[in-house]
Structures are given as C-alpha cells and as structure tokens.
Image (cartoon, rainbow, N blue to C red; front, side):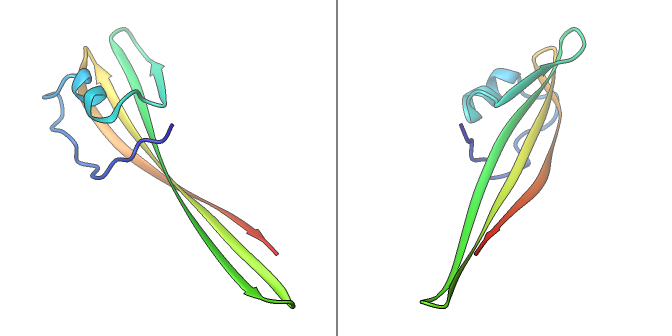
Length: 95
C-alpha cells in the first residue's frame, strides 16, 4: 500500500500522540520496535514517471523512474518525538 504525504512538516514534536498519525496517514508500511516504549514507523510514497521515445520502425526507447520517499516517525511513550524523510530514485531503461 502506498500512502501519499503532501507535506513533511506534519507535527510539532512530542505534542501529538501516535494515534493522531494513524488517523491521518493510516497504518505504517513498517513498524520497528526499539527499546521499551519506543518504535520507529515508516510510511512509503512512490511516484513513477515513464517516458517513451518512438521512431517507428527504426527504434523505440523507454525510460522509467521510480521516485521513492520514506517518511520515518520515532514514537516514544505513544508520542511523536522525531521524524525525517529519505529519498531514492530507481532508473529502468529499455530499448
């Protein structure tokens, strides 16, 4: 499942409980339990771009990019205490 997140500044740290995050973004893609009372929640956002160049009958070339964004939220005692995001782009070229 892909969750769309429109703005990275979703909350003021340690002011919102973890259920507030679930209500707005749904279930996280991944939950990692850390120490007692701490967990790390990850939400994924994927955007795909597909470009195609065709000079028929000579050749056809396509290029696909997957833009991956991972949003991480650190939860401690049911409060959001930190968050950040990471980017990754995957390329796929075919002739």
